[in-house]
Length: 119
Image 1 (cartoon, one colour):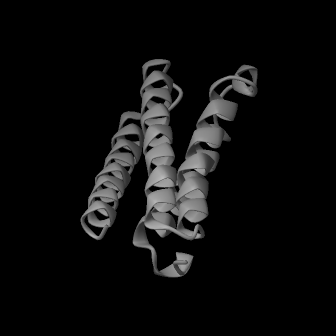
Image 2 (cartoon, rainbow, N blue to C red):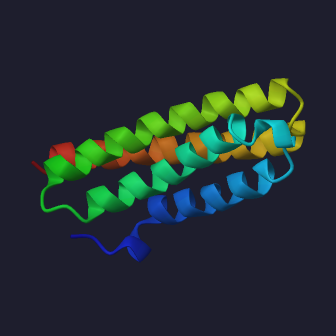
């Protein structure tokens, strides 16, 4: 079992979720059940799956939930790209959030590799 507060990737994922919620608050109301919902769910899934994996009893289970989290990060990156192309977010915000998502993806991959080598 891992202490979530010690997991830098989890803290970054939680912060990213908050930023996604703040961003989507500005989206058109018509997107309430479209991009807003999808982006919020994907961002929460990133942090939540890291947390669930960290709370499991084996490295294998942790890796499994990291893989799910990784997939959610790619979903969010796609949804962010779509929202940018629809002009729902400004370029500077898009670049900043994209950079943060990619950083979390790299951290996730590195953590998965670390867990593999510890088997």
